[in-house]
Image 1: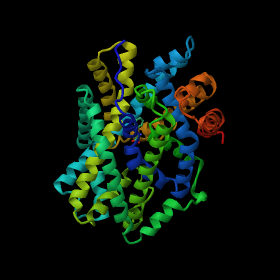
Image 2: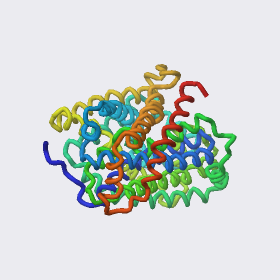
Image 3: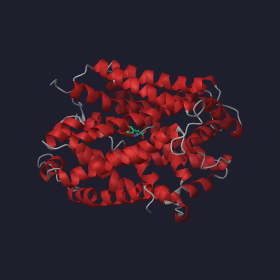
Image 4: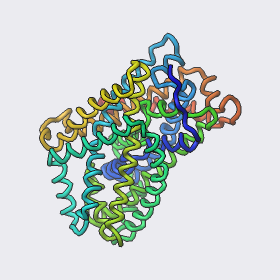
Length: 447
Ligand code: PHE
């Protein structure tokens, strides 16, 4: 086997994991999910989810990846020889294709907005005009597919040139910048007339607004946002050095990811209420609201440009980590060359992404269980694949994996305290399976 490269510094490893986690899930999906599920109560459930499921599952993926320094399939075969747990890897691979399929369509929209921002096209319109602008984009199959394909080409070009580490390095500068920009936008949004209503919506938990479906969405959102449940973090942590503290890294990733999501909410909701946009607008929400925020800022042209550029890089580090799942698998398990693995991954991804992009226009009549292709992929990705993957990972590390491996990984062979171990095991053994079981009952219509 070829020698696998490692991350040179702790910062490199954590930055890559944060790069994977922070993306459109935080900036685009979190606000609209919160908007559709009543705001405050959803956010509270989301945070509980991060604590009882998110951090434990991140840690579990880290344990599987770093203890074996291999991809998911090889790792599970090594950790449980003679057993068939490794078969779950195929579910992860399928899941990663579904995620990247719908995700890259939204990345395409980001490029269009970046382009519009550069042309100055985001300036000087009314909220209604911003809304029709978005409709014009998604209902035009050429534009929608064109931008999606362009994004994917960029993504696979980066991967085939082997410059993804370079992109991650760039992103580790861009991410803090994105964070600062979000803060600036939050302040501007809060200064809008009527901003208070947005904050109330976001932080006042009105449980009468929360449905079982909302709870399910909060779980799905947490998993998607943290990049867990499809072995992405197993792949990344397989490159971690044996000295990094997994507990520290897992909590850092979860904390930064949640912070970016909440900041995105604080940026969007005051503006939603101030401009009179429906909080339940769904996937179009941020595209209708953001241009209005830029508009009333001094130097709005540059802010808009910078914002979409940073979001573009944040999405690229996420899609790189997503495509790395099938690519590493094909190279290491099927002895494919890297270019070949990239080609196959790209072909599957293009097919799915084009279908998702066309579901807003040419294929808008096609429904899967009452949902458009895009919505069905989005739903299946987070609420089915990632949730199932999370359950598998929790049960595997909690019940099946030798406790010595868990202890060894948390304490780095006795050099660290590993104080989190009892909490981790409790969540993995009981909390995760019980909550996912209830969700499953809900999905099958029993409750
Ligand atoms: N976590 C990413 C986001 O929030 C999406 C993602 C999911 C990336 C799964 C990798 C794996 O945008």
